[in-house]
Image (cartoon, rainbow, N blue to C red; front, side, top):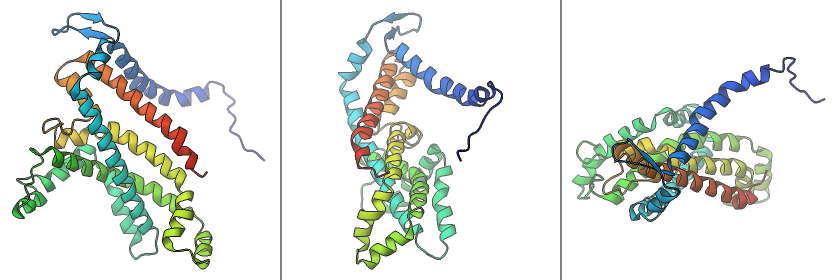
Length: 293
């Protein structure tokens, strides 16, 4: 027998959907349309007059060497954060799924970082790795390691990558743990009796069964790396040193808010949106084929 929810009042379903639709339109569709609108306009330095310039803003952005460098930095940053956050979370979830003493407290502590705001997470890492006041920062200096992420671009990119990954591990951990706990234990026990090693059991049984969750988290982590890491970068490095940590989303902020180039930053927003949509489409087209539902 199929159970269905029936609304006698035809207006009630629309009223229930109205808050979410309103939020989506105001905070998603309206800003996207505004970005598209401003991307084809050029504003004078005093903000008194605008001119319709077709795709001139896009041409200027795409032929800017600094923007190309930001694209390279963003892809390296996104790949690193996604790989570190997902692999670490899977390892922790695999360990938490075992019968260990204090597993409840262990899981609770792993979930806590998800409640920390990105800017606050960046401040925590700043107090740890700051070359002057950070505990590990001073320890590295005492060991003779030239650690100063405010002057070294590679160290700065490494630091924001680790901070952004740490912030996302808890979210991935929750989903991976739920996926692992949904696997029937009898299947793993049968494979163990047949002589399958733990590594073989993972790659032939566990990983295929959690592949839908892995694919979902791949999408979420990619979007997180592109957009939600702004607070971490802004607090830790401000895009520096020498624009070494200036990702695409931070460059949109820098050009639009700091340098008041509304047309150029809007064009960058549209390009960033197209990049994320394109990557998502490619992953759904090719990666999803390997997912076992």
